[in-house]
Image 1 (cartoon, rainbow, N blue to C red):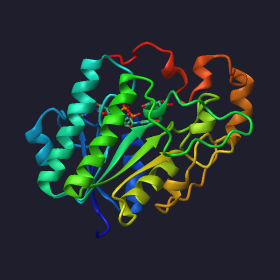
Image 2 (tube, rainbow, N blue to C red):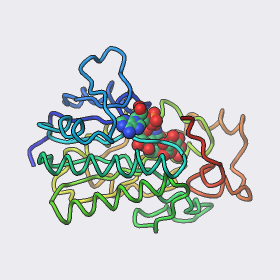
Image 3 (tube, protein in one colour):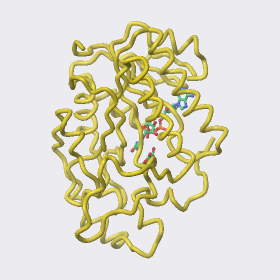
Image 4 (spheres, rainbow, N blue to C red):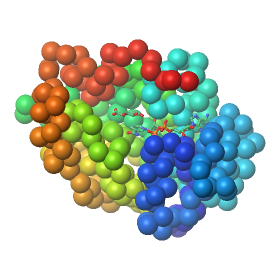
Amino acid sequence: MPAPRTVLLTGAAGGLGTLMRGLLPEHGYALRLLDLRPIDGEPDAVVADLADKEAVREAVRGVDAIIHLAGISLEASFDKILKANIEGTYNLYEAAREEGVGRIVFASSNHAVGYTPRPQGDDPLIPIDTPRRPDTFYGLSKCFGEDLAQLYWDKYGLETVSVRIGSCFPEPTSVRMLSVWMSPADGARLFHAALTAENVGHTVVHGSSANTRLWWDLTSARALGYDPQDDSEPYAGKLIAEQGELDPDNPAHACLGGHFVTDPPIWPY
Ligand SMILES: NC(=O)C1=CN([C@@H]2O[C@H](COP(=O)(O)OP(=O)(O)OC[C@H]3O[C@@H](n4cnc5c(N)ncnc54)[C@H](O)[C@@H]3O)[C@@H](O)[C@H]2O)C=CC1
Ligand SMILES: O=C(O)[C@H]1OC(=O)[C@H](O)[C@@H](O)[C@@H]1O
């Protein structure tokens, strides 16, 4: 596959989309933007719902690859998740197949395996082939997306890198995030590696920085050429002083998915 230049970024108005709009052009990409919501200062962005199959097909036409971030990013009712994350991701893959797009980078999540106990003491890091244990309907939709990606690779030769993102924000804001944080700059490095590595088929990777307190194995991400440069450790002293160490007897501290394993739906719309 020739190196992609023009990349459709779905979910471009969101938190991660906004960070990536700032960082990915430095890696040489021309971005086409799509979101449900208009984006300030981006009059050419496609404002469309993933439910609108015609609009999605038009948006993917002519791009070399897609970074798929759009969707509901927290727990919500099953009906909402079904529409945005399950049907929406299906519509995007169908459009990509019909338009001959060669590769998608799919924003999966740690919540696809959120009930996995976090390593404690000398426990080994969580491997990338750990069994699925979604912690929410949201996490379940990410399992669906990964399986859809596998189907479209096996059946149609459309490649995907599914990135089980930990927490990608400018700074970690909780003690848990010290272990799963992905700095925005490392996020852009990982997306770049996922777009350019050869022969990925469908590859699943963990998405985080090289944190001192890492909970999961980054081998499959590094095999794409990802070389993380950041570590959450400088934030550790302040966060632990404010919040205390994780309590292994608290279910919301005992699993990879953190409070997603215990909280009710929190999507605001
Ligand atoms: N930020 C993080 O740390 C993590 C993010 N992810 C995933 O990465 C992606 C981006 O996350 P964030 O930027 O944090 O979420 P966000 O909620 O800030 O952004 C999501 C964007 O998708 C758009 N969107 C929602 N439904 C849509 C639809 N039907 N059609 C078109 N656009 C739609 C929203 O308008 C929003 O701008 C999400 O898929 C999320 O599940 C996964 C793990 C961690
Ligand atoms: O686990 C986490 O920290 C993150 O995981 C996700 O999948 C969510 O989209 C994000 O809003 C959370 O902050």
